[in-house]
Length: 160
Image 1 (tube, helix red, strand yellow):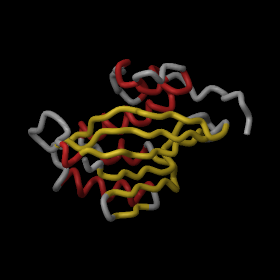
Image 2 (spheres, one colour):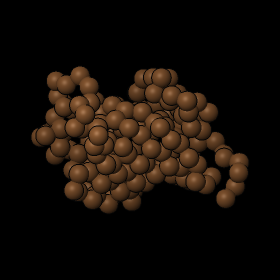
Image 3 (cartoon, helix red, strand yellow):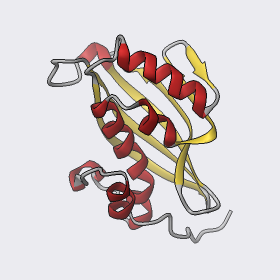
């Protein structure tokens, strides 16, 4: 593994390209440019949830991306798109997610692991309730064109 991490892009530009406003407080202590670029994937996932936009959500995944959502293991961008479209039309309608990073680790020049905390805020809610708190693991890869994409995401409930 190389010790030098090549650029993953500019978070501000990545977010602007998707029409997402940058919230610098989201990054917490992870303020290096490459860290922010990797975390832009999570910021854009939050924006897709807020818009209930299954296409924007799924397009952040690699073509062979994987999402473990509750008991559903989804193993392609198209499965993720279909699942989220049904969710945003049904039980997730009006829902959004909130959270932030607690760990960013570069595994190689083209792969990073992020751990976040947060959860789903149902329609009409104002915050993540304790029974909905989760920790999530994200594996983010840098594709050949330099675009950071989500390869794998899974979450687990946090029980006090």
